[in-house]
Image (cartoon, rainbow, N blue to C red; front, side, top):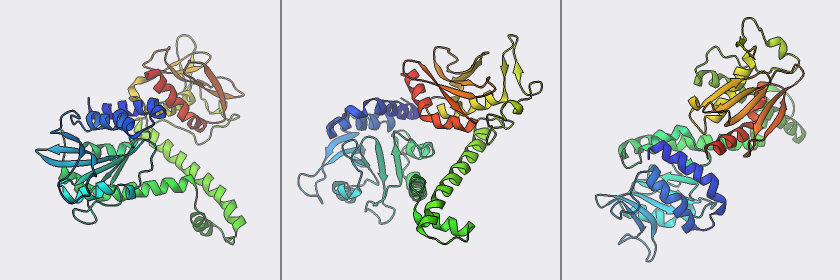
Length: 365
């Protein structure tokens, strides 16, 4: 199985089975062994490649073992310690991994609970495992920017020198991204205060900070939406695509120039620029689950359909933009029952991203 296909297959399995896995052994069998075989490409049934319950002859306490050691030519290449799914991956609880890292030739160690994989090396002190991972993979929230680096750890393309040379940048960029994510999740008072004092002369009282926390949150969300719209136009190759910042109910009909911008077929079906822009947004959302060329559209007089594989039995979403008074986006459940949601502008489609992705996964299953 190819590298990316292996990751996607394992992520799909994780979504469907994570709730029924209760023990560490079940976690190993369901997720960690498939990760070693399908993603990293090692034969889990060949002890010359993958040694379960690996024990070193010296430098460790008796009876302690590392869950897996990935081998090459009799030397340890990667050490793996496993926890039960849902467990906190606190490096303080990985004492065996620390000890075995120092008494083997391994430069790569993995701490995982089956969903999240933390990759460590020895950047801070030679032959001593770092306390912070240089790479983090979450199967339920895959960061595609790290996949080229992860591929360097696979059997067919293992490149230790390249891994180590890029590990420091990966380590700190990844840590900074996670810190930024935590800021967006819950805005710290100091962060709000810093921005407030840069734009206002108000005193940093608790009431003012509380007021500006909402304003900062709104400003950040608007900024990110604008950035996403710009990236969409670039990533989807539509430099002429215009995704308005806000198309309100009242202004939507006026934004359409039927003669110059809209497309009309032989049956009198008019495809508007707004429908095509909405399609691009849904397509970008669905691309996290399938390749973009599999997302198609068909316009009808009553709605604009977005389909998987151009198959009308595989509806992803529908855009109901023909009414002058109100726009709707239609989403589908597992039984392909449509629910229509009123929206005020194109950006409101992002609110249904999780539902759209779930629909695509259901159609794939």
